Picture 1 (spheres, one colour):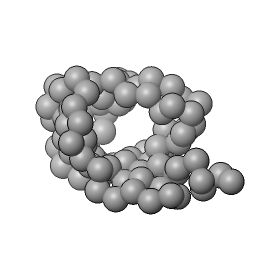
Picture 2 (cartoon, rainbow, N blue to C red):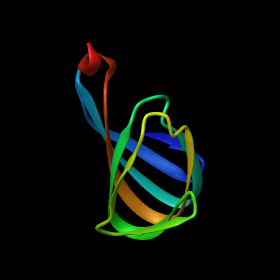
Picture 3 (spheres, rainbow, N blue to C red):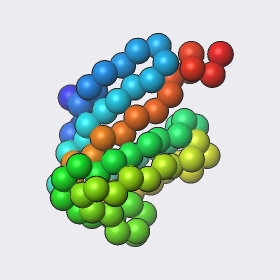
Length: 88
C-alpha cells in the first residue's frame, strides 16, 4: 500500500502487460498519468475528478497525455493501466 495525499492505493494485480489498483480516497490527492492511460471505475462513494462530479458506478478514461489530475471526496475506485511491455 502506498499513500499520496489523502489516498491509499493497493496494487491488486500486476503483470508484464497491465496493472490493476484499488485506491481509497478521503480528502484530496493529485496523481499523474505519467504518459499512460488510466481506466477508472468508482466502486464506492462520490467526489470529483478535476472538478467533474463522479459517484459509485461511474467509469472514465484519462488519456495518456492528460498529465496531473486531482481527486477530491470520499470514494473508492479501481484503476487499470497498460505496462510498457503491452506496447512492444
